[in-house]
Image 1 (tube, rainbow, N blue to C red):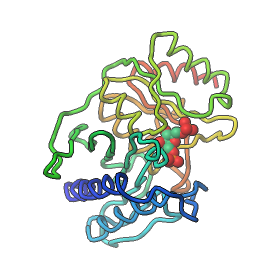
Image 2: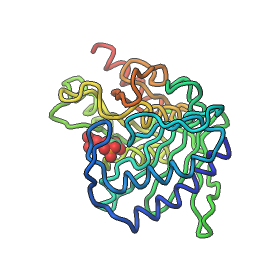
Image 3: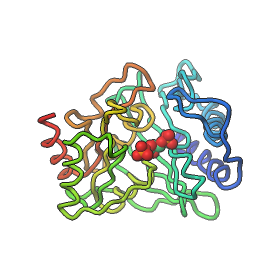
Image 4: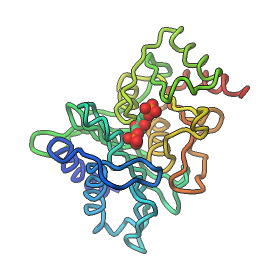
Length: 281
Ligand code: AHG
């Protein structure tokens, strides 16, 4: 596993450079979910593929930017599901973006995750790893090494509310839930990038991030394999919870690697509230 973490660090340094200095324009192609790919998405995907390719413990790669999984080493133990540059359009407005990695065994179901990693490219470059030893944060130093900063644990209850999706398409039940958090004193923190938004909640001790099913996208927007499962794993390891409204996210089994799901990540108190609201849905 350490070899994979080291490879992610190497990729992160190159991706950070690409974000800061390379072409930000659109390409002619679309990814499997129909989003027009930015040159940057394609380049970051290539950086990761190149760095992962020689690692013999990796059997296969599945990228949000690729239609189908890409086989690597037949005898490898791990399958890696990753989003090379989540929220890439935010780079154009100089907001933080991130890379997300889920390290699976056997198949891409939530319960087969062995570790999850994300990298935030912001004013600082930070990497967070989650595995059975807990959730640890590292920061890129001027000598291009990642220094351990601290372990991350969530409080039972937080103060931040990050509600995703188009509000006019929220169900009345969801609208009521979001408003009830604000009525309890929660503050709005939503940048439109799930990596920095979820990172902020983790570092500030807790809160709630939601991306519900809406009238236009009943299964939500965020992809299980590349985005939702890795963060569900991080939140659980940090002492929080992650559900689709009713069910634990990591118990879901996608039928296709690009499947999406409604999702809620938070500390325990907030998720209790989501569960009781959505119980009647
Ligand atoms: P993309 O992968 O197309 O860059 O989208 C980013 C994701 C995620 O990072 C964020 O939480 C969500 O889309 C924001 O979507 P809304 O603007 O619909 O809230």
